[in-house]
Image (tube, rainbow, N blue to C red):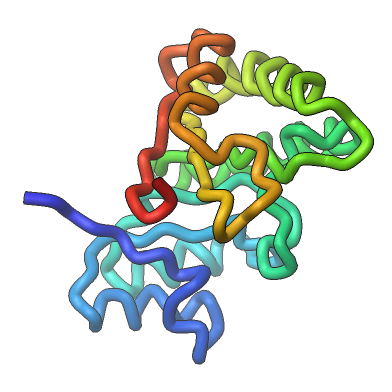
Length: 182
């Protein structure tokens, strides 16, 4: 029997994020996911999840401003330090929250730089991220996002993700197959 998790970053938006977990539970969900909860303290985030009686099964790493169209930072040449800092913080959140899966979005195709250079940068970053996540007992996910909703997304199709998984070669980097996007 399939089990579903509701993305509290995009549903129940009539209330603040920390109140959405209870809304999800009231709607019959026992599992939730979110984008990166920027500006929310770990204690507050963990308490809201616990109070609602749901499990956090997936959380995005910092992907930029998702509401304005950003779809990840891994291909951004200027984001190395931001990615390192966010990964360290996310791994602390993961340890506290039951080690949810972590979605590492590669980003939108950046104008003025060849796609293959950006793809190689994503692979390189995932290669150093994977062992850190593995030490923490965490799985990183790559997700294809369709090019209808996100026309510039770097990995819009299954072959893009499979090529990345082969290039990275880490057992804790896997494919998040979101049927909506494929």
